[in-house]
Length: 152
Length: 152
DNA sequence: TATTGTTATACTCTATAACTATA
DNA sequence: TATAGTTATAGAGTATAACAATA
View 1 (cartoon, rainbow over the protein chains, first blue to last red):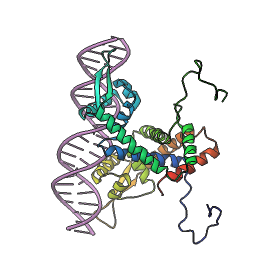
View 2: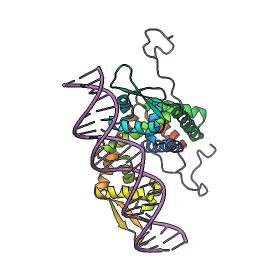
View 3: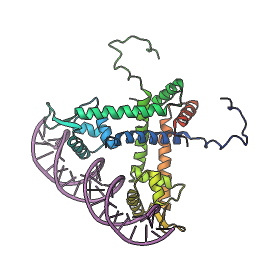
View 4: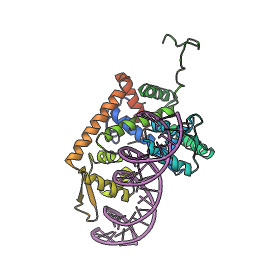
C-alpha cells in the first residue's frame, strides 16, 4: 500500500496491464474456473459433461428427460451419456415405480466417491485462487457474484 | 427488508436459498458466463472451440503449433479444427515466409465479421447480467476478479 | 394422441500413432 | 535428428429422425 499514490517513475518496472474491462474479467474468470474443473475431471478420465452429470446426481434422482433439462441436452444425447457412464460403473439406471415409461438415474457408490474427490480438488483449486483476497474481500466478491447470478 | 428478522412461520413460504459459498459462486458464475457465450456462438452455428479459435485470431497470425499452445490442443486436433473453419470460409491458411514447414492461420473477412458479432452479443449479455450492480459495485467486482486471475 | 426413452445416422471434436517435408 | 504439419483411426459427444412402449 505504500506505493499507492506514488507517481510513475523509471524504477517502477514494467507498466501494469491495461485496465481489465468488466466483460473481459467475467470471460477470463469463467475460462480459468472451467479449466480447473476440467483438469480435476481429467485426473479421473472424466470429461466436463460426465462430471456435470455426476454433479447433478449428487442430490437428485432424475429421469432421463429431467436430465436433459438439467444439462440442456437432447434426450438422445442423454441416452448416450448415461450409457457410457453406466458402462463405467458411475451411475445406475432404475425403472420409475410410478411411470413405466420412465427411467431414473442414480449415482453408484463408485460414482459418488469420484464426485467427492473431484469436488474436493476443485474446492482446493478455488481456495488457492482466492488466496490473494482477504476474508473480507472474498465475502464481497461472493456477495457481488450472488447478485449477478440468475435468481436461484 | 421488512422480514429480515421475522421468525420462521407457516406463512413465510419457501425458505431463502442457503448462503452461497465462494466456491459455488465461482463455479456457477463460470457456467452461466460460458452458457451465454455458447448461445451467442450457436446463433452463428459455431461451437465454443470454433469461437475460441476465431477469438484467438482477432489479434494474432499464429502457426498451427502456436494455435495448439493457445488453445491447449494437440496439433492433429488443430489440423481438423482449422480444416473445418477453412471449409466454412472463416479462416485462411497461408505459408510462413521464413519457415517452409510452417503454416500461418488468419481470420477471413467473413470470419472477422462473425467474430465481431459474437463479441458484441456476448458483451450485451454481460452488461445485462451486471445490470443489478451499481457502477461502483461493478468496479469493485472487476477489481476483485482482476486480483484473482493468473498474473497476465 | 402425447410422452418417455432408445436406436440409427451423421457430424464435430479430440488424442495417438505413423507419416512427409523441411530445418 | 528435431520440428511442423497432415492423415488414419478410434472414441466421446451432440442433434435429428424414426421407432416402440406406455400413458
